[in-house]
Length: 460
Image (tube, rainbow, N blue to C red):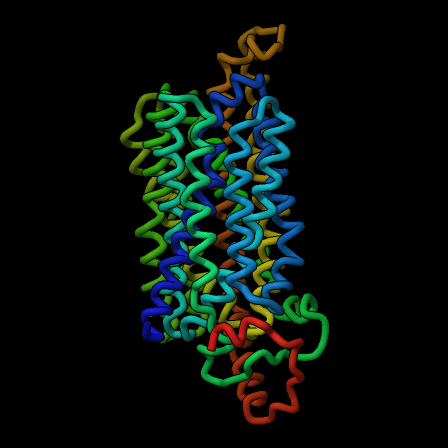
């Protein structure tokens, strides 16, 4: 197979792995209501499941990210995909909340390999001028995986119960794990203008990443963005069922469009426009990201203001708002590659994901669930209810969750501001990296090598 063919296959497989990553991750959000009713859970308990998943994901992501800078990325990726696929199936065997909790923690461990290894590979498969578009294709796995998860999992749960939804997801994941073992793995730095190979600056890899000003804004943006995405992922389907009166299958198909398929044009537009503006301005990708995020805010506010039953208006407005936020991935992820040297990209992604999940994704479901329970109790008390048992609160859960969902557009305002701040520093950081790589390529002794990387031989 030609180099172009191997590169295309690698991109296609990384897309498929990313799709299964989000398919498996989103199953719980698609079948939340039947699980909640079977186990008698509060919204806070539901949110805690998502929080635990993201905390373990973030904790193991740091060492795994550092590992991807030293060893074969495709082997690490294959092992991770296999682990999370098997444990996704195990989630269907849970007979109580604790067993489900533990199995979802295991899924988080496996999925922590995906982003550092995949994005590091993407940085070496494509040069800077093509990265935003390539990463947008890779990140299409996010909306497509989520869309399929809502549609498939919701339909299976409606017909056969929620447990088989977890079993079905394991099969394609295991196939992807096997294919990852034969995927092309390029040498680190292979797509750069200046060949620095596996060399890096001396010092702690974590401190080196954090010495770059743009990375601090990027990390903060990730926390804000993931708060919103995981709040929606956990509670969009329950919101549609409680507030708009849809069953689990109908809610799954609506969420598939609003939260999943709507992201496809957003990702592609972000990649194409980001690359185009980047040719004129070094901060072009981040400017595009901030504009898209800012445009999503009024759309989401208006969508949440639709009355019960106005589902068509809600779908159009919320779908457009959520779709715009997907431009974040193709623009910001490629920006990380632009300011981080090749030998530190796995570590950089691990640090970014650690903060993004600890400060964002872990708080999104838990915070939204907490506010939903609080607003539910307030609505019940305002109606004269004094016996605040789960059964007595059930009629007020729609109003409580509806009010809690407004946190999403408010966080969107903060995210747009942070991205604008990042656009101020990114030009200097990009130039600093190019100067270092140019000097290192001309004077190899100035840039000490890292430990031998076994993957290089496999990628040649």
